[in-house]
Length: 260
Image (cartoon, rainbow, N blue to C red; front, side, top):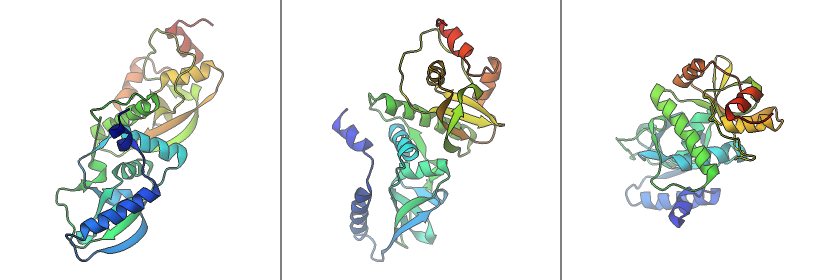
């Protein structure tokens, strides 16, 4: 991994955020004389506006993973500008994850009454892109794929999905694809699968092989990142077209020609 990629993907610590706050304060002092440091506050992420054009999928996936699995929670930096509008200056990926999780977010706030960005948009409208440099890391690539799926569905339906972690019984899950005819490896990456919830039914969107491996090895449940926009999406119709199969030993073994 190149050093530039390592720096780009390094998660900020609270100390980093505090250092960045001081840097932004002194930078803003060059243009604005009336700056009030409000300190740390708790904000609703849906009230925040973006000051950058896009988010990087691998960084977004990393922030989502660390937030869900390890409680990552470092304050972002926000300017309270003209008419009280809240602009994110640092921490866009953290803020975007907070909208998906429906969680409040910590923020260091600089109150600058004259600050205004006419082109700024609500954080929910920011786009997710794949960075030009691919990182050879199976965990990071799994989460990048997850956020790309979520972002695609979000943009297609113009609705912000709600996400949460759960542990689901594997045989209660519906498959949305047929497995390819190859052997399941003895060991694959142990990351949560991605599941869509609609009408009290759980559909595997990503992670069929991971679910099958767990089931074949005698496990009944699997860690799942569940999300929903509260309505049927296209891949659910695909599941119906292939017979709406549940994840089961038969489903996992037969298409893959595994011995019993």
